[in-house]
Image 1 (spheres, helix red, strand yellow):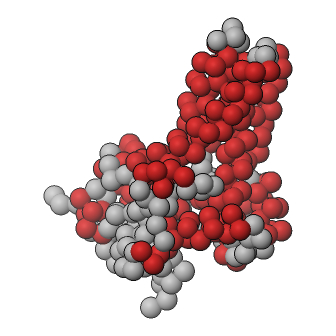
Image 2 (cartoon, rainbow, N blue to C red):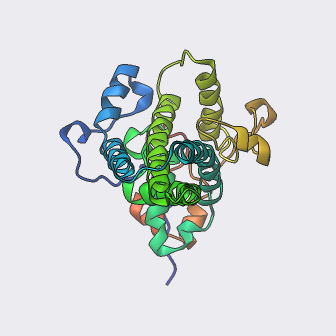
Length: 271
C-alpha cells in the first residue's frame, strides 16, 4: 500500500504545549512592536528556563569556584566556540535532508526548524525547546570549561561557568534572532546588517547566511551571500526541501503538520 499524498494542503499545524495565559494566542513578530517583543521575551518559558539554569550554574561555580585565569578563559572560549557550534548545527543538522527520513527524529526536526521556516515570524516556534537546546548547550560548553579548569585542578568550576556562559549567550542569540524577524528597523548598523542577511536566509535562499550574530563562519566556509549574488529565489526556502513529492515517500512530518504547505506563509489560503 502506497503512502498517502499530502499535496495541496495549505495550512500547517504547529504543535502547541501548555503555556501561561500570555502564550495562549499566537504572536507574529512582523506584527509586533519592540516593546511587545520585550514583554513577550521576558515571559517566555524557555528564556526563563535559561536564566534559572544559568543562576544555578553560577551558584555551583560559587560553591566550587575556579581561579580567575581559568574562569576568564572558560568564559572566553565558550563565547568563541558557541558561534561555530551553532553554525555547524544550523547548516548540517537543522538544514539536513536526513532527519525527516527517520520516524523518531521527524517530530524533532519539525519542531526545532521546519516549523520556523514554514512560518518564519511565528514567535512561538522561533525559540528552541529546552529538551533539545539545554543538552546541546551543555555539550558545547561544559567539556571545554572542564578541560580548561582541570589544568588548575578546578574542572567542576570551569564547567559550570562555561555552561552558564552558554546559557546566557543563548538568551542573547534568541533576542537578536527575534529582532531579525521583528517589524522594526534596528538602530545598530551591525544588527541591521545581520537582519538583512538573516531575512535573505528565510525569504530568498536558505542555503547560506546561517549565522545569527556573526557571519564569520559563513565567510570561512563559503556560505555567506548577498541577494544580488543569487538572483533566483530558492524554491525550497520555506520547506527546506521537504516538498510534497518528498512527503509522499517520508510522510511523518506531513502527518504531524497537516500536510505540506507551499508558497509564502502570509499568502497561504488566499486563493
